[in-house]
Image (tube, rainbow, N blue to C red; front, top):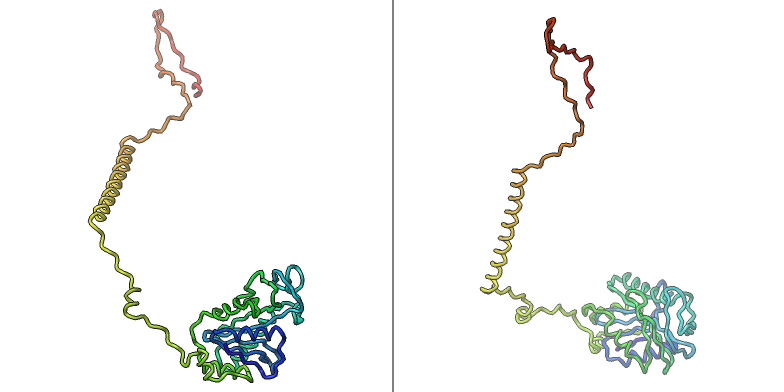
Length: 307
């Protein structure tokens, strides 16, 4: 990897060890160390790394003393290592993640003002502990698109894996585009076009690979095979059984409806009122004098009460 830093730049011990890590990698890319971006160069960015697939902004953090343990990264507040405040080599008010976000925003704004579309810019906080000290972060993802990595010259595998895979985009950063981006970022020391091509950058953006005729045949979805005779017979048997079942259900329903129509249900007589029969009609009988067995009936004077 190509590393370009300003001549006579005042690099901290952690930044110098970070530069040694980058120079030992065979990865294709260029690292611009110690850039000054923002309004009138008001913000210093530790490093901006450009690879054929994208850009990432690096914030290098060192330690003042040897600290070992699990690095705890709260959502808001200072970092701690094994319940003790992380003794970083730089006094940072608040959360160090905010400083990384500001650096990413400053780089993106600088490129957009130069009419360069940077796409999605990633960010990473790289911790450089003392050699022989074991520091492991409790989580490697700080925020979407921002990671944290612990590395040094003796244990730089995680940093190399990150630089080779932080962006899964196409190889859209050609040598000419990288040179233009270095100019837009105000890099005083920048790689030449020949150096970038020798390092592995493309001269022209490669086209998307087209599938060959053989690969296209492999990706074609084969047509379904016609059913066999046994499968056809089984299908017809299932259909016939379903049809017979429907006919039987229809016959049962029709028979039930016909039986209910021929024998309608009779409503029970719920009346409990009894009526007293009326007396026979009155026929006056005339009796003659001295006539035997003649009884005169008197007409009823009242109508019996109905119960």
